[in-house]
Image 1 (tube, rainbow, N blue to C red):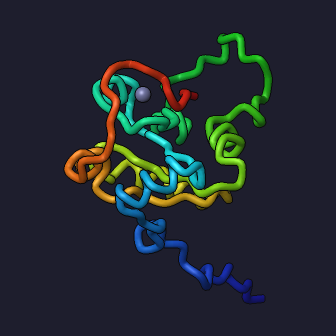
Image 2: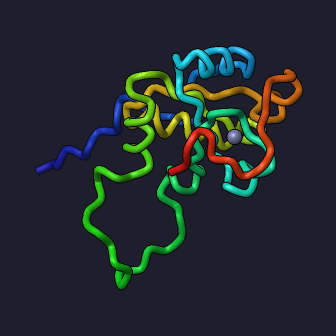
Image 3: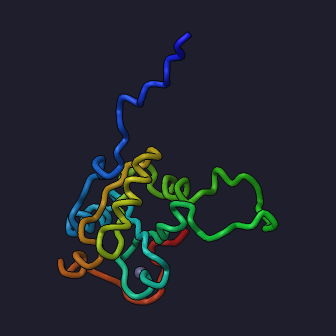
Length: 151
Ligand SMILES: [Zn+2]
């Protein structure tokens, strides 16, 4: 008896080719300052403290992707925490609005936007990151203020 091998998946999920939508910094700032979108900064806290877009919610990519170091089993984990994951927190903060993801140059934000999209949180990548944001002459904060909150 010939066993039928498991057929290959017909639709190949290529996360590289299926890149998230993009938005330029000027448009991102316009939407975010109008309250029509949530600006999400996925850099590390130290980078955010140097300079950031006003009102950007700080959630480092490492936290968003669940890569925040080893969480030892001996640690006092409060529970399953499914409802308190960074992704769920972003979903709650976005409240149905698109999430505009920014980083330093646009690489980490592309990853984060793809991750959020895949989890059902509509997200767009701010092209060029804070570098392009700065070049566009858009307003910026320097210092460790948490004007947009942090997760
Ligand atoms: Zn600020």
